[in-house]
Image: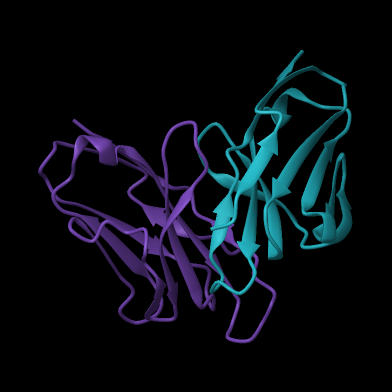
Length: 110
Length: 117
């Protein structure tokens, strides 16, 4: 199956700082999603972004499918942004199975 | 807002016992996924349904795990007998993708956290 790598694995930020999370994948994909896993374990949808750029408030994401990576930008971070961020990709031509990266654990300190 | 429902939220059991998890996808979603997430890792697919049919169960340990979606709506995942290594979060997701469509956005339920003693 497709390999999905996320970096950095861990990130500690001061409240108000900006950050960029990266997701690299090893093969062509049909779809890509970014999730935030809250402290209770639920995965919250952030972006559905197989290509292009999207923005939602302080968060934005860009996927360059031809170069096999996606970036998640968090601006003016808040303590509520803490948690684990996952990207998940749907490998092309394999029956719609999604593969997750190992996540980036973000801690925002006041 | 439509949500994926799962129950129970937490389950503690002893090894060799049987456990079952239930998932109700968002209404109208044809595709349903069961994932297992071990602490510190990303979710891994166990089984995927399209309506009532299994699309992929290659990662499901079939000697002890079973999954069904009899009417193509809600689904049950069962483990019998449970082992210590089954302790994990079990997540259910659904998407509205139909046959021949490229749009495939997953939505997750709150998960069931299983502890096997």
